[in-house]
Image 1 (cartoon, rainbow, N blue to C red):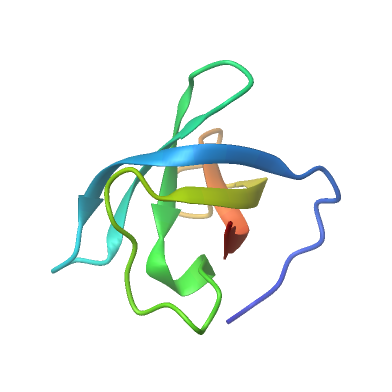
Image 2 (cartoon, rainbow, N blue to C red; image 1 turned 120 degrees about the horizontal axis):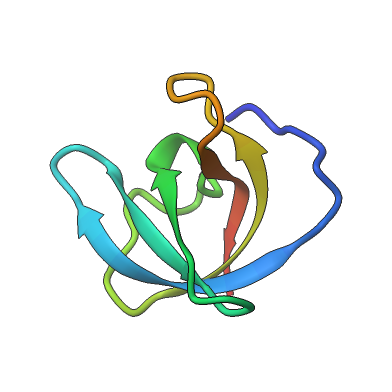
Amino acid sequence: MRRVSCSVKYRGTVVHWNAERGFGFVQRDTDQREIFVHISEVDEAYESLVLGQRIEFEIAESERKPGHPKCVNVDVV
């Protein structure tokens, strides 16, 4: 897993998750915005996320979709 240092940590809840494809969306607590998350950014102890799961994460710009945010350095709380 690649770690990017973004310094600001956020918390949120998994609101959509596609286990077959390994991605979904997290609703950030601070403003209810939904942000993309990929399993490759999740702590290696977890093989998947589940709906309703609480996570802590940083935000970086997506390489695949410039200008769009994505969750990085994701930890389950």
